[in-house]
Image 1 (spheres, rainbow, N blue to C red):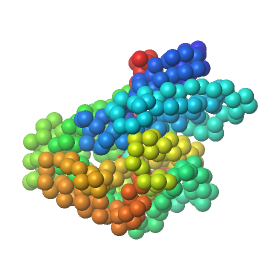
Image 2: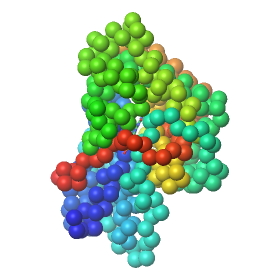
Image 3: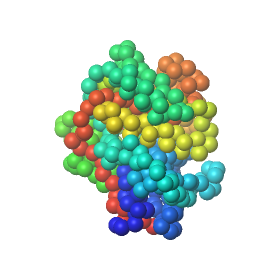
Image 4: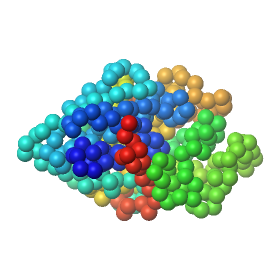
Length: 353
Ligand SMILES: Cc1cc2nc3c(=O)[nH]c(=O)nc-3n(C[C@H](O)[C@H](O)[C@H](O)COP(=O)(O)O)c2cc1C
């Protein structure tokens, strides 16, 4: 790997994406131009409503690419074709020499940034770090939820939202595909040990996720969603330093708005990493709330739509309807060391078109 463009793409591929799907391929056009062949997973992933979660990931990728290019004294210019709605956007990125451009201070965080899904330290975030994170997210605004009562409210919100996740066949199909069982690392999925459950619950989940009938039986007769929801949602919701809601400057409506959201998110996430903070996205309440706001069906389980309505009401009460409609991201942060288990990435070779 000798060309700067290959070295830059090798860094950029460490951008985060929902369920580690890495919804992109790269076509190197010349030494100074690359096409990102993006795609989305809306067809088979209930969390990728209108492909917007994938668009956020594309934004994360573009920002990571920009930061990686700065190590070579290069800036980037990019466009997206077509501009409107499509499942396969192509981003043309040009590398542009910027003599004297210093390497971006977030460069070293690209590879160390990783999701922490386990309970985190409740140490409050320092004022200095909050200031740095607010600046990193701009022009997006950050609404912080730091006090115990606020963290408990978000924990409850996630607990509610998880009941939907764990009770609908549409999400079951996603979960069984994205976990690499028995693994500490995974190139193209989430390794079991990074999911955040203990060994016993992990075994149970693995068994249940083999057949939808098992999930139905457990949920109906044995309150099957409670143990994972306590471990994955309620407790981690409290056990962190803060939750952060990223709010777009205008209500996001177009795919491009979500790409811009992803750019801001990756700056925010890498800045958190620089501050010694780990982060976990908490996206499902926002997604279920958007299904409700837009009046879009997402499941064949009738009660789940009623639960999603409650999630939407909670979010509106917590943040106000205007903020809720403009939010592109919700996540929790805490001062933590690197997780012992994490997702890795597909090789650059396999991502090249
Ligand atoms: C748009 C988006 C949505 C995500 N949603 C969630 C989420 O709801 N819960 C979660 O635990 N992780 C979520 N993630 C984190 C991804 O699962 C994670 O980035 C991916 O598996 C790669 O792992 P890494 O970030 O540790 O390298 C999300 C990431 C992105 C970019």
